[in-house]
Image (cartoon, rainbow, N blue to C red; front, side, top):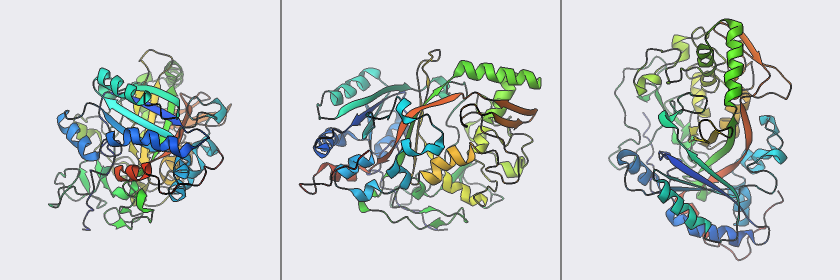
Length: 463
């Protein structure tokens, strides 16, 4: 077994690893001025860089729920990196360099209609604050808002976790996450504790039942990546600029959920099939609202909720439809159009989403946030190539579309084959309101970016 890399937890931002667990968050999006953007960027970064929460502090808080009044993370746009004289970082990923608004095949509404990141409201610096005490969180936010750094605040979004960590459609969220390989000290203590297990049929290693281990280079630059053919041995780290190491790429999307439309439309489809609406919704998601997967409905513990595979228990979709949301974006141990089961691990993302809006408000949804090192082959593959395509991820099978997040052109019917028959709809239940592709540097890189390297950095490119 290849030795796992040492992770520098004091350098990695906590929102990447292990993620914020606080009940409340506040997202502040800033746009740099066209006149002297470098000075404005450095001023704002100087205000917050010393407050950025490290992975080590995040792990301590996660374990004891103490030690942090608030947590803070910072991410940057390509324009910011260019203004600071780092064209190498600005071009580290094609999708990141191009920008979300130009990735038209995501089938988002035109950027001119976006409420987040649209023309004139592009996010150049995103600051995420988190806390369990709303008073302390508001105080920390006010300190930043009062800093008068010369940047324009173009996005201010409050969010909070709903009881039971459910999303607004009523389903438990965040059950399945990849477990990062890596050790945290000289003694070789793994980041994710390991539970002894018998050999798995496909020889993958798990931290515990259901929690598959993934090499950290899929989420952090400069570290070993996941092999496309061998789930245990790593692939070489991707060559990147020195300042990229321990950084990651953040996808941020504001997704409004049409809860009344979802409930009414799924009730209509259920009536057509002669089944209970709750059963139909569970088939669309692949889980029951409490998190129990359709392929393991007897699950009770958190470990059991994620302890299942498809090829071993339900290869043809007779228990969980091939079009179910959790199956479309994570086929687990099944071969896909992209290769053998081992290749599926290279498409994994670290999800850090949180809900916004009150349960009965018309303005409610999910702030989708995820980390990876290849936006095209991770987030975009899952959201577009698999969720939107009835012929994928399983080749030679009628997968149907992911009716939860899949999108077609306006006026086009979406269909899915469920356990009780085929259903179709022209309604979208999730409406993208915009967002951004951003780079989340390491803490040491943030410090370096705050210090001018030359008196005349290259000017930013046109938007």
